[in-house]
Structure formats: C-alpha cells, structure tokens
Length: 65
Image 1 (cartoon, helix red, strand yellow):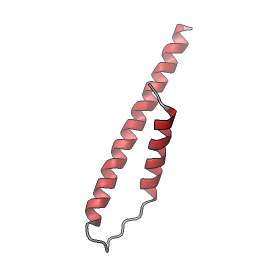
Image 2 (tube, helix red, strand yellow):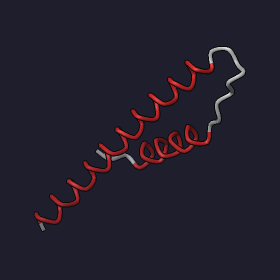
Image 3 (tube, one colour):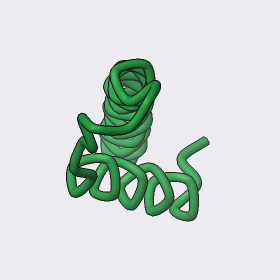
C-alpha cells in the first residue's frame, strides 16, 4: 500500500534534515548529527521502497488491463 500522506511526510522529513545545520559548539552535537544522518538514510530507504511498490502496482494494473 502506498499512502500519499506517508510519502509526503517522508519527503518533508528528508527536506528538514537536509536543511539542518550542525551547531558544533553545542554539547552532544556530534551525536545529534549522526542520529540525523541515520534517520535520513532510513527515510530515504523507506521512500524508495514505497515508490518501487507503487511502480510495481501500476505495472501490474497495466498488465491486467
């Protein structure tokens, strides 16, 4: 199932993480930056998975027609 709301939320999350600027002067910033990078990778992977599923569903529907 490809939920448009989920795709939109993942896209927004990725954009927000891309806009984030590290504040190296803050304690724990390295951990925060590392966690943000991991979260971005997971979000991109999930978005890619949803897009592939949508393409496969479209192709299956077209073949059935």
